[in-house]
Amino acid sequence: MKEIVVISGKGGTGKTSITASFAMLGGADVVVADCDVDAADMHLLMQPDYNFADDFYSGEVAYIDQSNCISCGKCVDICRFDAISVKKKLYVVDPISCEGCGYCARVCPTKTIVNKNRLAGKWFISKIKTGSIMVHARLGIGADNSGKLVAKVKNEAKEIALEERKGFILVDGSPGIGCPVVSSLSGANFVVLVTEPSVSGLHDLKRVYELVKKFNIKAGCIINKADVNPGKCAEIAQFLTENDIVHLTDLPYDENFTRAMVLGQTMVEYDHGKLNELLTESWENVKKLSSG
Amino acid sequence: MTDPKPLKIAIASGKGGTGKTTLSTNLAAYIAEQHEVVLVDLDVEEPNSGLFFKGELIHEEAIFKMIPQWDEKKCTLCGICTKVCNYHAVIQLGPSILVFPELCHSCYACSELCPAAALPMIPKKTGMLRDFQTGKLHFVDGRLDIGEEQAVPLISKTKKYVAHKYGHVSIAIFDSPPGTSCPVMEATKDADFVILVTEPTPFGLHDLSLAVETMRALHKPFGVVVNRYGIGNDEVITYCREENIPVLAKIPNNRKIAELYSSGKLMYQDFPEIKKSLSQILEYCVKEAKGGRA
Image 1 (spheres, each protein chain N blue to C red):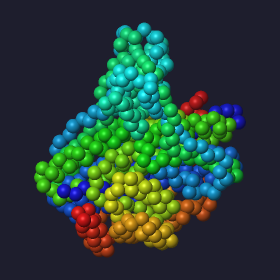
Image 2: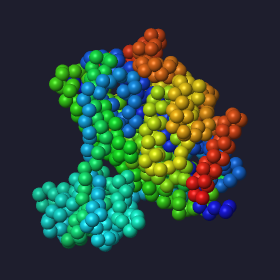
Image 3: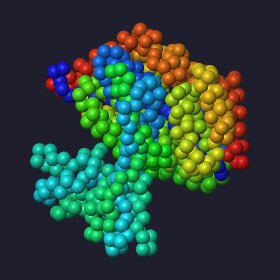
Image 4: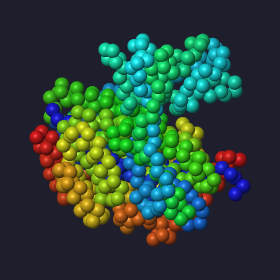
């Protein structure tokens, strides 16, 4: 079983549209993991049935039982997150600022502060239209996207793939280079980097590739909307060569991406011409490279 | 100015790549034609605003977060530090205490509860802050070091720098990270007004609705700018109408705009209708923020 992770550094480069097309092409042999839990969109194209749903708890949040509070103020003094304030003479915790370190509960002389488990989101196992299974999630509003929910989604997908003897796990990662991305990269066999030929696209590609290098994972790159800036495109191609990143393909700027999305379709369902051909070719290549 | 407090506008979006940076940079440059303005890039994982300006670097500093450092000589191996750390960032391995900086949230519990004062807090570099100037525009960005996982402390310190150094500038624009989780909350929580940038597509709408929930949880006044207007469908506009969310501007879908952006160029000077949109957006923010404070 091979694990393929699709990331982009920069948002809006077409990562999810491309991942969805790969999922469609891979069909029953690919378990999909939507690890962009902060703004998950895969479900809009995959027709999930939400067959299984469960709450996900991660970390803690402080809670002050007002009846025993003696207003000593110790908790406010030690909190490094400015999460406790005095409102109408009552000491209250702002659950958004609280990072659940538990320090306040430890110094409270009347033991009136307790830590409660924090509901961080929900996660799902769904049958999807590709004939396979998708593990996906929804992070709670303002929740700490520490990568724990990402790890949960990925591990569940891995277990399912092993149990059902699937060939691949396909992971839609999140933008950026922080904890959720680090979490989606760990254990991958191959990384697909989706970029666009813009100053931001190249800048972000370089940063996210620095991270990929730390994990020592083989990578390939798709340049989306390649014809928007041929000069920048050549610059990216050169970066790929210099860093031994496989240049998988160039996709043209095509509003069919949006038209397909509006219909809830993947690109390979909507388009039966050039784009379909390029995506199919890339997917075959990615499969081969991840197994090599 | 009758109001000494600067107006803080945060530009955010649920979905990435909808045009946050395009709007932030163009709006800031437009304002800077006449007024002093500070543009702050808080998308510290992938900061891009700086690619659109050539300014003079006037200040640069490393940003640190505090982590405990084990002092072997003082340590009695009582184990309290490992028990009080909720993040498993401090563990005991045989006769040694190990600290995992990337797991540490800088809560100070281990350090201050250590009876032997064997875990003093020391600074660890997590990123860089840079401050540029070009004309009336000040540009500040935070940049997370590769491999560092926590964006929030760097966002918080970048904001503090701006508040301290540019408290006198009447308008500050904050380019926020994408998503709806903690870095976005940190980047937008002090703003007077938040602009959510979206695109009229199913992904755009879905992620906008998450961003709207986030802003409502923060009790922030906000409005929407629809970018790439004309592609996709009308559902974003319908959603805003049904939810009573003001649509501040619609920026047309235009390949030329994408091309200018791709080369790191501002676009409002080439498109009079966009210049007009910027002026409307600004006017709305000023009015809303004043109303909110009165």
